[in-house]
Structures are given as C-alpha cells and as structure tokens.
Length: 333
Image 1 (cartoon, helix red, strand yellow):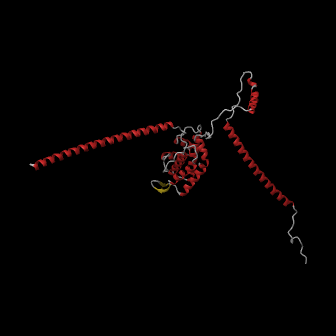
Image 2 (image 1 turned 30 degrees about the vertical axis):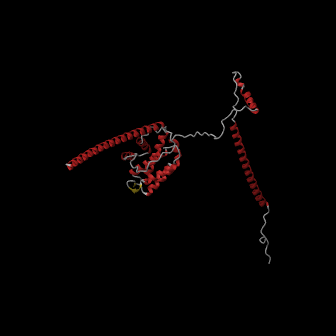
Image 3 (image 1 turned 90 degrees about the vertical axis):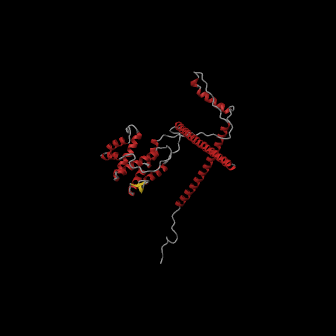
C-alpha cells in the first residue's frame, strides 16, 4: 500500500511540474514576442525620427550652408555613361562644327547657348573634345568614355566654390587608369598607352589650365565677413570731450552749417572714442613707427654699402692702366 501511494504521489508531482514548465515556456515565448515587437516598434520609431530629422536638416540647409568640398565619387568605368551608341552615331554623321554643336546641344539638353553663358561654355568644351577624339582616331567607345570622363571632372570641379584642383586631378587620373588597365570588373583596357598620354595632355592643357575660370563661371562667389573681438578688455565707457576735440568739432560745425542754416538744423559732434580703442590705436601706431624706423635704417645701410662699392669701382676705373712689370720693356741683346 505504501509503495502504491508513494508511486501515485510521485506521478502526480511530476505531472504538476511538467504543467508548470509548459506554462513557463508559454510565458517566455510571449515575453520574447513582446520584446521583438517592442524592438521593432522602437526601430521603426527611430527610423521615422531619423528620416524626419534628416529632412528637417536638409530643409534648413541652404545652397551655401556647407562650404566644405564634398567627397568625390569613386572612380568607375564610364563608357556609354552620357553618350550612348545612338548618340554617338548621330554625332558621327555630322560633317562640320555647326551641325556637331546642334546635335550636342540636343543630346546634352542645353537650352539656349546663345543666351546662357554657362551653356555656351559647356558646348564649346565638348565640341573641342569631340574634335580632339576625331583627330586621334578614337572609336565610338573611346570617344564616349573620353566625354564622360570630362563631364565627371567638370562636375567635380563645380561641386564647390572652394579650391580642389589637386583632388580633381587625382580623381581624373584614377578614372583615366580605369580605362587603361585590364582588371575587370574594376577597370578595362579601352585605351592604349599612347592614347592615355594624349588624352591626359589634352585635358591638362585645356581644362586644368583654365580650372579657376570654370570654377568662377559655374560656382557662386563666396564672401568672408570677418569680425574681431578682443578678450580681456573692459566695456566701452563714454568720456567727456577734450579741448582739442571740442575745437575740431567746432570747426567742422562751422564748415557744415552754411547749407543748413536756412533749415535750422544742427550738426551732431563726433562721438568720442572709448578709452581701450584709443589705447589700442596708440599701441599700434608706436609699433608701426618702430618697424618703419628699423626698415629705414636697413635701407640706408644698404644704400651706403652700394654707394661705397660703386665709388670703389669708379676709382679703380679712373686709375691709368699700368702694364705689369717685365712685359713693357724691350729686350736688348
């Protein structure tokens, strides 16, 4: 009887423990699902907040808000990038420069080159590039890649009003090597060595020599407003005018009162300068005077030395020419 009761009791206890474990597993699964759901909601909320913040920052930033030069794109193969096969066939059919300009204006979507200076410069740039490619005997693929390379270089130049000629030249050489070395998928051997050298010389002599002119025409001008604040100085205080300042103000009033006497208007005396500004001005004047005195002394010393050298040369020239001893005497037998 005891064995039966103990076995029945143990069976009931194991069954209750198993039910308790199953309930714990269910609760753990619910907790995980709730945790995953909350994590997904937090990710979604973070993404929405990030997108709204990015949109707000983009809206707040103006065209000239960031004056640092933007990073240049990675050099890649640019064959058929801007001028495809159909466009190159259209350009190949042209017989003179005027037809080429018309076709290029349509392909590059330039409005009115006669009215827009930028469009006219862009059209001249690519027209001369196509003429160079024809003179070198480039194929359609090579001509398309050369024009795309020049277009990417021009975009990198006008991306910022700041000077980035070195970065643009490094970008140009890297893109150029992407079309001269066979290493797919990063680069191809589209140009030969002589063609690469000729294309590099052409771009350097035509574009990089006028780099600042292109940047001046295609980028906005940047102006610097500089303001200086002197730390450690007391705030300005108004002091009464001195006698000399009063006399100067009276003279200025007498000179300017003539046209204003009829209208009964008075001229306000000039405002006195604060004490720290007056002290700073006096200090700057003394330093400038010291530097000027030193420079004047150096100039005078150099002038004296040059005069002495000239006088010594003149005295040497004024002396009669004397033959060295032994050469002017006649030999006697």
